[in-house]
Structure formats: structure tokens, C-alpha cells
Length: 188
Image 1 (cartoon, rainbow, N blue to C red):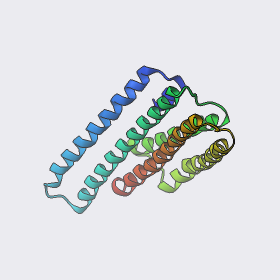
Image 2: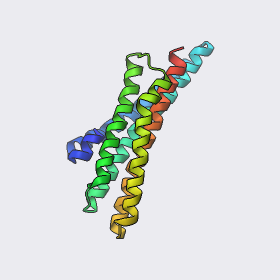
Image 3: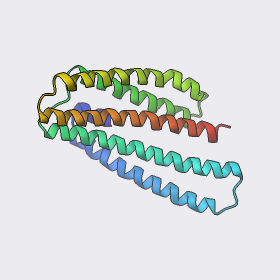
């Protein structure tokens, strides 16, 4: 939905993102509360690690939701300045958004469908492509900041754009952590 909002600027999509971010906060709280009750039972070492992994995974999913919210808030702030995201570096951002979604969906599919991809396969298949694009985007963004962002107004929009890029990198990192936690604790 964050990708959709960046492209459409639809208020209804924005409202849904805010709603789902609140839901992710509640889910995390409920998982932590439930896990706290489970920990009181006599658990094996494996079960204890898995409970901790579930808590960590719920925190990471909630962190992704926070960053998705942040992305749309940054976009909204850029729009409120009378600016729009456009040009070659925005084209790169759209590619990054697509790759971020690919990375997340790949990890989610592996977890939800108990796929057989190893962390090394996942890294080779999705993350290398993402990381390469991230470096390209950061380079073109930095060049834009140096050459075209002349006024304070544009600089502030540039900072917001940078925040969006950093949020995408965070989502990629946390998605990788989710995948690895799942593989380490639930696929043994």
C-alpha cells in the first residue's frame, strides 16, 4: 500500500496504511502478552528459543509497518511543500520500491509456505539485486543533492526523500532478519 500511495497519493490508501500500522502495534502487544504467559509454563530449550523468536519477529514486522507509515508521511510532507517526486532519481526510487516489495514477498512466501530456500539462496536471489540498486539510487540521489537542490525548500524535500530511501534499506534489513530468525528457529 505504501508503494500504491507514493504513486497515487490517494487519501483512502493513506488512511488504510495508518490503520494497519496501528493494527501491527496491537498485534505485537498481543504476541508479547501471550508469549509472556507461555513462558510461565515449563518449556523445552527449543520452545523457549522459538517463543523469543516469535517476539523478535513480531517486533520486526511492527518495525516494517512503522517504516511504511514513515514513507507515506515523508511523501505527504514533500507534497505539502509543493514538491513532487519526479525525474531520474524518482525512477530509481520506484525500482527500489519494487525490489523492496520483491524481497519482502520472497521472505514472506518462504515463511508462510515453508519454502525450501536457504538464507544463502535468499541472499543471492533477492538481496544482491536490491543492494546493487540501492547503491545506484544513493549515488544518483547524492548527485542530485549536489547539483540541483539549490534552495532550502528543495533541500528539505531532498532530506525527506533520503528518509524514504533509508526506510527502504531498513525494511530490506529487517526482512532479512525475519527470514533468518525463522530459518534458525523454526526450520531446524
